[in-house]
Image 1 (cartoon, helix red, strand yellow):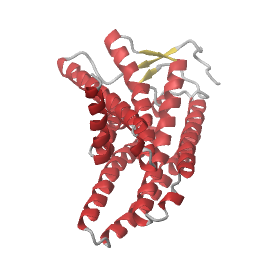
Image 2 (image 1 turned 180 degrees about the vertical axis):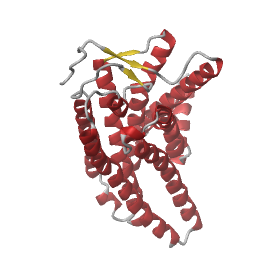
Image 3 (image 1 turned 45 degrees about the vertical axis):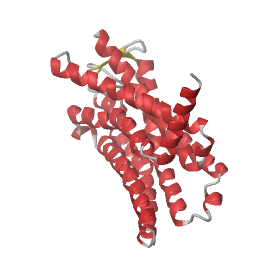
Length: 312
């Protein structure tokens, strides 16, 4: 590693997004509330799907994996941000920074591929219901999920190692509330243009390819829904598609804006606002959009509540 002008014991400074003005105190409190809602919602979703045998299907298994990824995503950045704000400290160690970059980038990559798998699952369920047990068997579903984790983690390892192969001299202030490698590239002493070019092509694979799969899957779904005789079935299918596409739009739109721009075009304020969307808001919205409006999940939730009351 080419750390010419700093030692391995040096800390980075996270500038954060809040100061101690009344408005920012309110916003910080709001972020904590969103974090708690996201943490509880995703934890509840994982437990419900695990405890209810009727939810042991490929679709709900994929939902549980999405909730797990969201749960890990918010705990990667928000607790450290809250600790720094409340303690008045803004530092983060090199090891802590590398850990955040690895988990953050890995989880974003995992979700990219998992959302594509979920879209494929939906298209098979609607377009080929008779072949669904074979095309999305537990074994195939498990392999696709494991592949999403492996591909995302591989991207995280590569990005973390590449980021810390550069030198960081002078100011070590990161204009973010967590360690994100695009923000570190800005303060690097080295020429990072080659890495940015490689990163651009990696983003094409990590983002554009899954988006293409999602678009193709839902194009097939829309064509199938248009030819449905049942108006109720058509309404349910469109409701499912619109919910998924809304989350996909928020997630991929923010990711494309964040990672496919050169560092020279970056604005710290824009980066912070966009990061909030897919770091804090999206993990809160996912269980609401995907699951809490689902009748099967609502039934499982009421069933667990009923058991809890009867056990008292």
